[in-house]
Amino acid sequence: MFQKIAYFWDFLKNPKTGLSKLETKSLDTILGNYLTVLLLSSIVAGLSTFILGISKSAYYHYVLKAKVDIAAAVNYSAGISISLFFFYLFLGTVIVFILSILLGMILRKPLVYCLRLLMLSMSPFLLFGWLPLVGYSLVIWVLYLVAIGINK
Image (cartoon, rainbow, N blue to C red; front, side, top):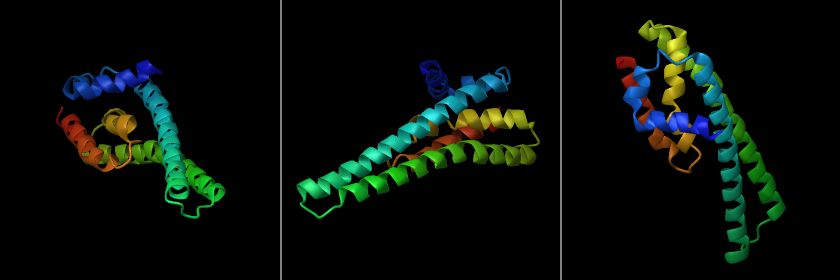
Protein backbone atom coordinates (compact mmCIF):
# COMPACT_ATOMS: atom_id res chain seq x y z
CA MET A 1 0.00 0.00 0.00
CA PHE A 2 2.74 2.44 0.95
CA GLN A 3 4.58 1.70 -2.30
CA LYS A 4 1.55 2.90 -4.25
CA ILE A 5 1.36 6.10 -2.21
CA ALA A 6 5.13 6.56 -2.64
CA TYR A 7 4.66 6.23 -6.41
CA PHE A 8 2.47 9.37 -6.47
CA TRP A 9 4.58 11.13 -3.84
CA ASP A 10 7.72 10.68 -5.96
CA PHE A 11 5.84 12.08 -8.93
CA LEU A 12 4.87 15.18 -6.93
CA LYS A 13 8.44 15.75 -5.78
CA ASN A 14 9.68 15.88 -9.38
CA PRO A 15 6.78 16.06 -11.87
CA LYS A 16 8.89 16.83 -14.95
CA THR A 17 10.88 13.62 -14.54
CA GLY A 18 7.71 11.64 -13.89
CA LEU A 19 5.98 13.05 -16.94
CA SER A 20 9.00 12.43 -19.15
CA LYS A 21 8.77 8.75 -18.20
CA LEU A 22 5.02 8.71 -18.88
CA GLU A 23 5.36 6.80 -22.15
CA THR A 24 7.39 4.02 -20.52
CA LYS A 25 4.91 3.30 -17.73
CA SER A 26 2.23 0.78 -18.52
CA LEU A 27 -1.39 1.75 -18.15
CA ASP A 28 -1.95 -1.31 -15.93
CA THR A 29 0.65 -0.13 -13.42
CA ILE A 30 -0.61 3.44 -13.30
CA LEU A 31 -4.26 2.33 -13.18
CA GLY A 32 -3.63 -0.17 -10.37
CA ASN A 33 -1.77 2.40 -8.29
CA TYR A 34 -4.34 5.10 -9.06
CA LEU A 35 -7.38 3.03 -8.12
CA THR A 36 -5.79 1.76 -4.91
CA VAL A 37 -4.82 5.25 -3.75
CA LEU A 38 -8.21 6.61 -4.91
CA LEU A 39 -10.00 4.04 -2.75
CA LEU A 40 -7.78 4.87 0.22
CA SER A 41 -8.30 8.60 -0.30
CA SER A 42 -12.08 8.09 -0.50
CA ILE A 43 -12.09 6.16 2.76
CA VAL A 44 -9.94 8.75 4.53
CA ALA A 45 -12.12 11.60 3.23
CA GLY A 46 -15.28 9.86 4.44
CA LEU A 47 -13.82 9.07 7.85
CA SER A 48 -12.42 12.56 8.38
CA THR A 49 -15.78 14.11 7.44
CA PHE A 50 -17.57 11.75 9.83
CA ILE A 51 -15.21 12.52 12.70
CA LEU A 52 -15.40 16.26 12.05
CA GLY A 53 -19.22 16.18 12.00
CA ILE A 54 -19.44 14.16 15.22
CA SER A 55 -16.89 16.30 17.02
CA LYS A 56 -18.70 19.50 15.99
CA SER A 57 -21.99 18.14 17.31
CA ALA A 58 -20.37 16.99 20.54
CA TYR A 59 -18.77 20.42 20.98
CA TYR A 60 -22.12 22.17 20.54
CA HIS A 61 -23.88 19.74 22.88
CA TYR A 62 -21.36 19.38 25.69
CA VAL A 63 -19.38 22.62 25.65
CA LEU A 64 -21.87 25.20 24.40
CA LYS A 65 -24.79 23.39 26.08
CA ALA A 66 -26.90 23.58 22.92
CA LYS A 67 -29.67 21.03 22.51
CA VAL A 68 -28.27 18.63 19.93
CA ASP A 69 -29.77 15.24 19.15
CA ILE A 70 -26.58 13.17 19.09
CA ALA A 71 -28.23 10.20 17.34
CA ALA A 72 -29.49 12.46 14.54
CA ALA A 73 -26.06 14.10 14.29
CA VAL A 74 -24.40 10.69 13.95
CA ASN A 75 -26.94 9.69 11.31
CA TYR A 76 -26.42 12.94 9.41
CA SER A 77 -22.62 12.68 9.60
CA ALA A 78 -22.71 9.08 8.42
CA GLY A 79 -24.89 10.03 5.45
CA ILE A 80 -22.61 12.88 4.44
CA SER A 81 -19.52 10.71 4.84
CA ILE A 82 -20.89 7.88 2.72
CA SER A 83 -22.02 10.35 0.07
CA LEU A 84 -18.55 11.89 0.02
CA PHE A 85 -16.95 8.45 -0.30
CA PHE A 86 -18.99 7.63 -3.40
CA PHE A 87 -18.51 11.14 -4.81
CA TYR A 88 -14.72 10.70 -4.63
CA LEU A 89 -14.98 7.34 -6.37
CA PHE A 90 -17.26 8.79 -9.07
CA LEU A 91 -15.09 11.85 -9.58
CA GLY A 92 -11.93 9.79 -9.66
CA THR A 93 -13.15 7.25 -12.20
CA VAL A 94 -15.93 8.45 -14.48
CA ILE A 95 -15.02 12.12 -14.63
CA VAL A 96 -11.31 11.40 -15.17
CA PHE A 97 -12.20 9.02 -18.00
CA ILE A 98 -14.53 11.56 -19.66
CA LEU A 99 -11.92 14.33 -19.28
CA SER A 100 -9.25 12.10 -20.83
CA ILE A 101 -11.51 11.46 -23.84
CA LEU A 102 -12.08 15.19 -24.26
CA LEU A 103 -8.41 15.97 -23.79
CA GLY A 104 -7.48 13.33 -26.36
CA MET A 105 -9.88 14.80 -28.90
CA ILE A 106 -8.61 18.34 -28.33
CA LEU A 107 -4.90 17.47 -28.34
CA ARG A 108 -5.20 14.65 -30.89
CA LYS A 109 -3.26 12.33 -28.62
CA PRO A 110 -4.03 8.68 -27.84
CA LEU A 111 -6.55 7.93 -25.10
CA VAL A 112 -4.00 5.86 -23.18
CA TYR A 113 -1.59 8.81 -23.00
CA CYS A 114 -4.35 11.13 -21.77
CA LEU A 115 -5.49 8.61 -19.16
CA ARG A 116 -1.95 8.23 -17.84
CA LEU A 117 -1.50 12.00 -17.78
CA LEU A 118 -4.72 12.69 -15.89
CA MET A 119 -4.21 9.87 -13.41
CA LEU A 120 -0.75 11.14 -12.52
CA SER A 121 -1.91 14.75 -12.50
CA MET A 122 -4.61 13.89 -9.96
CA SER A 123 -1.88 13.05 -7.43
CA PRO A 124 -2.44 16.20 -5.33
CA PHE A 125 -6.12 15.34 -4.94
CA LEU A 126 -5.35 11.74 -4.09
CA LEU A 127 -2.84 12.62 -1.41
CA PHE A 128 -4.23 15.87 0.03
CA GLY A 129 -7.85 16.14 -1.15
CA TRP A 130 -9.26 14.71 2.06
CA LEU A 131 -8.04 17.71 4.08
CA PRO A 132 -10.85 20.21 4.70
CA LEU A 133 -10.67 23.48 2.74
CA VAL A 134 -7.56 22.42 0.80
CA GLY A 135 -9.31 20.94 -2.24
CA TYR A 136 -9.92 24.24 -3.98
CA SER A 137 -6.26 25.19 -4.07
CA LEU A 138 -5.35 21.76 -5.41
CA VAL A 139 -7.17 22.54 -8.67
CA ILE A 140 -4.40 24.96 -9.62
CA TRP A 141 -1.78 22.33 -8.87
CA VAL A 142 -3.56 19.71 -10.97
CA LEU A 143 -3.97 22.14 -13.89
CA TYR A 144 -0.28 22.97 -13.68
CA LEU A 145 0.64 19.28 -13.84
CA VAL A 146 -1.68 18.75 -16.82
CA ALA A 147 -0.10 21.74 -18.58
CA ILE A 148 3.40 20.32 -18.02
CA GLY A 149 2.23 16.96 -19.38
CA ILE A 150 0.70 18.52 -22.46
CA ASN A 151 3.93 20.35 -23.26
CA LYS A 152 5.99 17.15 -23.05
